[in-house]
Length: 371
Image (cartoon, rainbow, N blue to C red; front, side):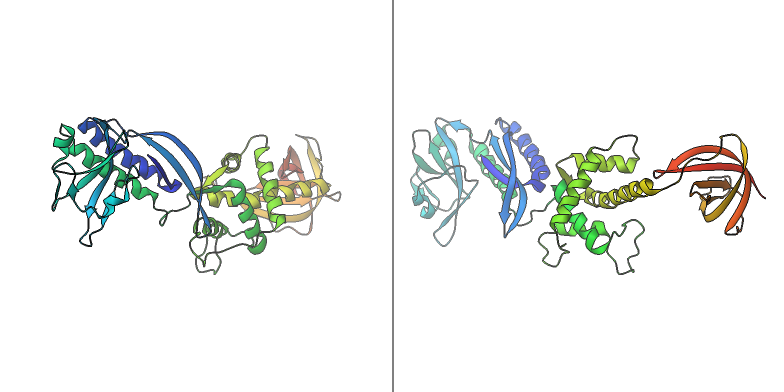
C-alpha cells in the first residue's frame, strides 16, 4: 500500500498504525510496517504543503491465492461504493449490489468483499460466505483489512493540512522583509493595546496561516534575500562563547527547516545581526583606549556622559556612571552613591580594570572622590 499524507499528520498516522497493529496481532496478521518514506510537497490551490509518501507493507495477506481488494457497500440507487480499496478491479462490480459469486444470491447483506486472485480472477463474496469460500475463519481478517485501509486512507485528506515547519532561509527572508518594512516589535511584554503587531506574529502568520487571504504578506525584495543569507552565514560561522539565546539561533540556523514554534525566535536573528553590525561599526570608529595603570590611584578630568541604574541583586541598587576624557577614552565608575554631576568633573580614583564592551575599550575606576 502506498499513501501520501500531509507531513503535519505523520505523528497521528503513526499512532493510528500502532493501534491497528495491536488488532493485527490479535488476528494473527503480520504487522503493518512503513517500509519507505519520501518527503516532498503537494500543491493545492496554489499553496505548497509538506507531504510524505509512505510505502506500507503487511496489508495484503493471501488465502489460497485470494487477497482482499475492497469491501462493498450497496446503495439504494443501485450503485456500489467501495471501502479500503487495495487493487483495481472490473467495472462490473459498480452495479453488482450485494450479489455473492459463491452462493450465487443477491440479497441484503451487511457487507461483501471483492477478492483478487493471483491468477488475475476477481470474485465478489458475501460476508457470510467468506469463511466457506476460503476455508477458514477469515471474516475478521477481511473486516480488519477494510477498516485498516479506511482508517489510514483518511490521513490522505489535505483539506485540513497545516504547515508545521518551513525552510530556515525562507523564514529569515520573510523576517528581513518584515523588519525592513515595519521595524522590529518584541513579542515579550508586548502591549496588545498599542496598535502594533509583534514581528514574530507577522512572520508566523505569513508562513503558517497560508489559507488565510487576509494574513500579513511582506513585500520581499532581493535585498531581503541577500540579508537573510548574510544573517545565516553570520550565525553558522559564529565563534567563541555564546549566550543561551545566541546559541539557540546558531542551532536553528544550522538546520534546513524550522518548526512553527521556533519561527518567532529565528525572526529576531535579523535584529541580532543588525546589532552586531552596529557594534563593529562603532568599534571601528571609536577612539577609545585604555588609560591609567591598574591598581594605581590617579586623577581624571572627564566629561559626564550618563548614568545607568543597575539591578538590585540583594545588596541594593548601584549606579554605573560613564565618562569620557578629552581624547574620547571611555571611563566607567560603579558605585552605590548617587551624584548630580556637572558637564565637566574631576575625579580621583583607582584604576580597577581594563575591559571592552561591544567592541569599545573602556577603563573601570573605583573608590573615587570628586575633587
